Length: 221
Ligand code: C5P
Image 1 (tube, rainbow, N blue to C red):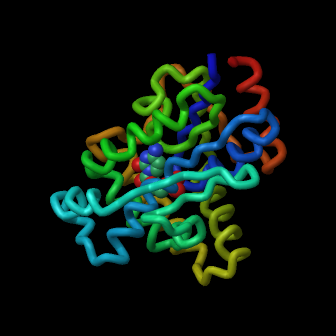
Image 2: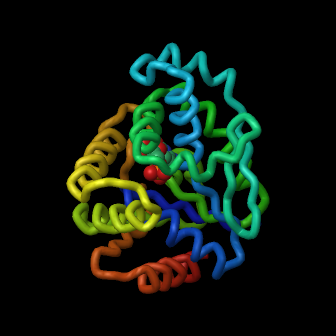
């Protein structure tokens, strides 16, 4: 039987970097579901699809094909044949992803793809609804969080290191807005699954956070 680890949590809790490192240590495949929502946001943004109009966004889905490939242990995501793994990280695409993710047709479009990726192999999958909706029978569920200010500072440092011009205040505001959107939407809102282990990394550095998660996974799997 394959092992599925579901990691959910708010923006900037370090889900992707920590999950990726844990997957490497454990020899699992890492699947970043946020990247899939970002691709849909990117497509709508670049093609002038009104993201406040669920009918238009739903219609756009028939023009979208997504492909996920693992290269040197890193996930690359292809939107209609193009590798958009870097482009989807732009701050405006974060907000676009947040908007489209509240549309039921978008979530339905991605659900099967996500489930297929966890089929018959050991995975760590991160997102907002993995333990609650996508993989309700996951072997291990973790709700990863940290104080909002700490998360914003980490996200800010990451963007600055990549050369993106942003202010700390705008990162904090954007983070709180996206968390609010994710936690209050009607479909698949972000919440801790009843059977998830809470991991708070406010006081931990990257290494400490990875050690904590690997320990939780080994204990439960
Ligand atoms: O995780 P990341 O910040 O890359 O996700 C981008 C956006 O996609 C989130 O703000 C959230 O609105 C949405 N998302 C989601 N469900 C997931 C993963 C991401 O709604 N499983």
